[in-house]
Image 1 (cartoon, rainbow, N blue to C red):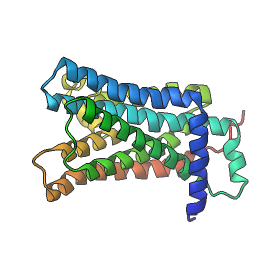
Image 2 (cartoon, rainbow, N blue to C red):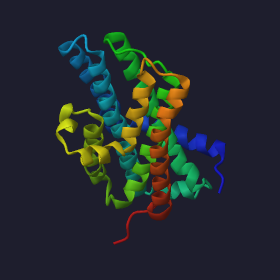
Image 3 (cartoon, rainbow, N blue to C red):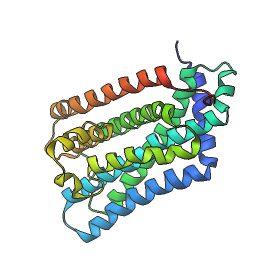
Image 4 (cartoon, rainbow, N blue to C red):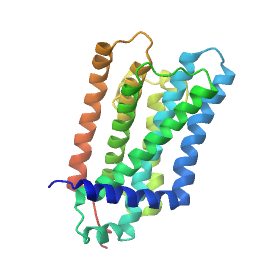
Length: 258
């Protein structure tokens, strides 16, 4: 079943309007994204001035956390609420395809997450010693791809969420694991066993951080960037396949019958 570009755009705009009118989404997603994304690296830069490599690690670790919050957690809450309010069921009766409905919801949050990442990054370039990435295109591509995969996994995750009130709480372990694996909580990762670090590195956020590090590497080349992007791209592709399979198999459009 193909996806109409027009239908996809309609759902994306509709989701965007609802998103910016939702005070809860704005406080938990936008405010936390900007507050943590800018505030923590800015504070670390003042505490450990003159250590740009430390600041970069902190920035990418926090970015992995807040991107998870704005994509995986947010779409889990959004789709669960739409399902429980029977809005998803009503949207299907309008002639919109299932792919257009889910694609529009995902597209909206990918756009929001990418724009928020841009605001955070530009703010840190201006306020701290964080350098501009040598390969901004590689950085952008993996932020967008990572946000899309996280949204897809968040949509699949709603299958195990019984009701809206529990969605954010149930998604918190993913937020925590993403933060630990990417270094957003500081050097916690260094004291964990090697196999745990390996497992956490397989997360989608780990792939985004790995590619971003290559984008920031001062001595990189185009060919080197392609080689460095191969493994993270493979990780995201595997997670995307898992997400697509889970959504097609277990995603629920209606409330669970008693």
